Length: 297
Image (tube, rainbow, N blue to C red; front, side, top):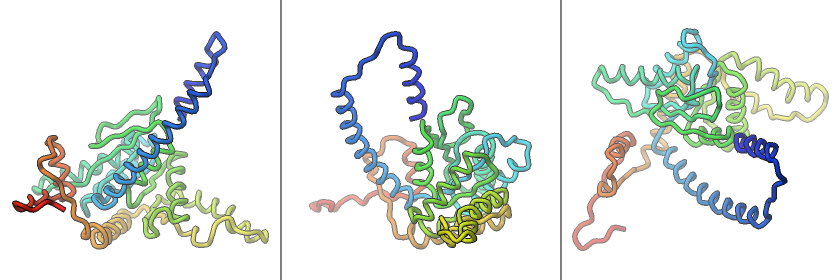
């Protein structure tokens, strides 16, 4: 609501006459909003469940300020390419410049490398943008969405991913990392959800853990986090180590989830040709036509 908040305040300040708000209109708006929210959440849960069984994606978080000729940019591009070449793992970023662009470029490099060998890459390149006056999309992603608010954007990330790597970044990356850590702490995401971070973040987390845990113990108080919370994130910039972590998690997902799910579709209901490509990317199978005299269940 940030943009609408600022706009509303500006309009009120700018108004030359005293404004009137009808209470009945407010109550009606709230009632409709609640109804719309319920429908939206039901649809979101359906989509989230599908994404979790049909796709394996990870998020790459990092600074938008990272320059293209920097070692940080080149590292994330090489890392993402290695991850996608190891497994069909989709990549979700903020869709902007810097680290986000390097990750999206890395996936495209993996796609090009596979194409040379006559192989297809079903891993998708997703950008989840935030409305900012000074930042736009990088134009690389296959699927791009935009959010007005960081809160809904964060949840959009979580709804689609099964792991994350937090590269070098600023407050935005810190927010994304801490959000995932909180969800893992309270078991709102799976206990084996891999959260990896560049060693840059180690000192940041050590200071946080000192304040919330070790200092409290030393002062005879109750720690504000548990001992298990100290191990929620793993720090590494070793590409092989990171690739092996995500590849191993992908293999477990294939065995425990994807292999137990059949995705089907009715060919007669698909008119958009791009949906056929999508059906192939999730290994969907056409529905079997019912035998004469038999109704489908």
